[in-house]
Image (cartoon, rainbow, N blue to C red; front, side, top):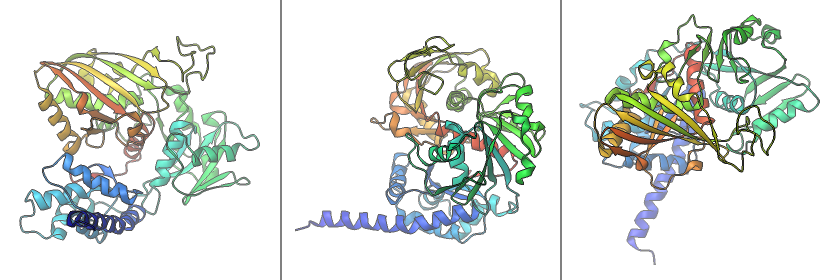
Length: 481
């Protein structure tokens, strides 16, 4: 016979499932029709399963005194679905919790409260013309950028993936590239449908019509021949890193700006979104999105420096192996990297510590860095051994970083976990630049050691898309502020 406690739990679980299933079509429609991404305390709900929606609500209790139930957040989602809003990322968890538990309503109805809180996107133009995007190179980062841009496609998409450019063109090449987009050993299958038109050299994916162009040099493509104008070209090859090389893209008809997904040389701005993206000016034709590691560590370093000041420090990166290494022992121009990547830990250099100062000049000359490549295919960790200007405690530091992850201007870059069981594979697919592992934090007066996880592929790609939006001059705020 079922006990009353057991029956209550089963009823509660069924209620959560019912609400989550009711939320899913609303979340999907808001995203496709209006470009609105719904989240709960930073956890994205777009394309989330029923269980993922429930789990996202469960995480609220890790940050707040009370639980947030799905029946409490649902009226806010329902009200948002009836509003005329521009593209944005809206955290219904924070909005609902503040309204219900923090007494911010001041007698206002949910609709009146949301009208005030979302005023910024009520007044934003809905007529921004989407920017044509070309992916030059279709490797690990190129394919993940394609997934993100396709995911964000629709009538209100502000970035329109029009083409990819690759070398080759041999028989079967198009289908192989489509297959690599369709299936990924780390990030799983593509969420949708992909077909190939061999005659027109086109990949069709969830409504996106992507022209595949074969070329050996950035300056030999006439994009206007494919109806592409004023395009933002994202160079994922890593072959060209200075103004002369990347400037070749601007010689092709139909292009206007170039973004490099690697650290740049010379005077090109290296941008870590959330830290120095405001340095991007309309007249900047070539910009770099820096490296995955620079993106992972700079936001957390900025947060530390803002509150405590940084005297100096060392960054050690425990980094998954990459295609730059050899699968088995073979010749490599770099030291140690010729040894089998899947069998060895390999000490190597990283420029990430020095590169931080390009985005955060106040740390110029204060950091050293090194890296160890390890036999995992994705998700890395940065160990920040920092000497601060002020003393602190584990409790104070973790509380500050938790609040930074939830409410600061770095909330889309820094995530925070209090789990004692989390391991690298749990972070595959993280959309944050870095995730602070609070249970590993060490503090001894002014000396602190922080452990920051990062999906060096997907998290970095999300940062690249954020830089793309700024370069394309399209607005996509995260609300509430």
